[in-house]
Length: 385
Image (cartoon, rainbow, N blue to C red; front, side, top):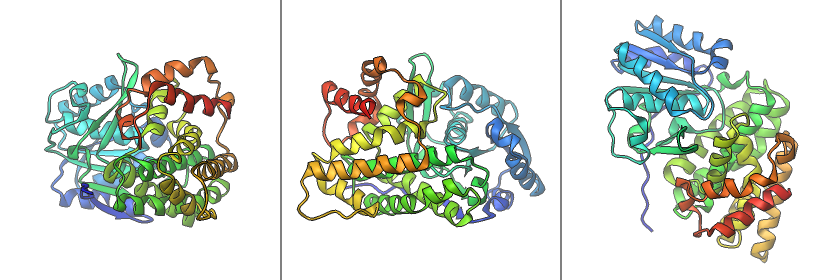
């Protein structure tokens, strides 16, 4: 087996770590930074906290709070134009996956020509300006991944920009910034991290290093996500979830790769922008993993063991798949993930979803090549509940 392990960026992890942002960026030689986030982060006072810390270190700060969910290409282009006009030499992405993905792309467009669409897929593009990512959720793992997901408005699909240039120079992971997350967002971002990890283990390009990272992430999630959904102020559980999210990002989007679960979630998210990405991940992952058990039963067994399940040596692939899929559904129910019916997606959309998901960049990393009919059966089981 031959596999690549991409080096991580410099990481600062722990309560209060965000207060080191300005000092570290000054040491990096930054002078004028754009801080990219959304209005929710601004209204929560987190943008002001970070921007003030950076200004106190002697840097100029331009604020951009126009990030949208599932970041559309036109919004990225607009932010990049502002950054170029302001003479920015460094970028902070502050928030959830959408803010960090936007920041990654803006950083590329500071010194490379638009449009961002020319960098979809694996790319050898280079960056020349500093990028710092600061997550405020525990789920996307974008702060440690080489991928930026963009919504291609013209083609109505999500596309990924992939390459070392999309990895930040510095990741600052401060669990205190996640304390204000409401239970619903805590739950769905946590299941995004779970999906990264489960898909990493069952991926067609899985490897032993990613497996170890993913197993630890799954264990942390199963032991702490229900706790933090019930008690939002539990900093111990928040810290464990921040670590799990980072491990999930490393295993699922850097050292290994996510696959058909994310193909479906990407597609459904591009069609239904009012539903968080993590909700779709949570809804599809049980059936994707159930299906994977027929191809890589020992890998699905690893997932079950990481979840704390008793997995007997003599279990058949079907038994392994049923047990692990059932446990994931139980976790979804415990943390309040809504059903397909509750979020209002009609069964008539199944064929349209599969047609696009089947072509998603991540679909090729499934443990076996999926036919359209096979992919359709997986999604039909999701709708059947």
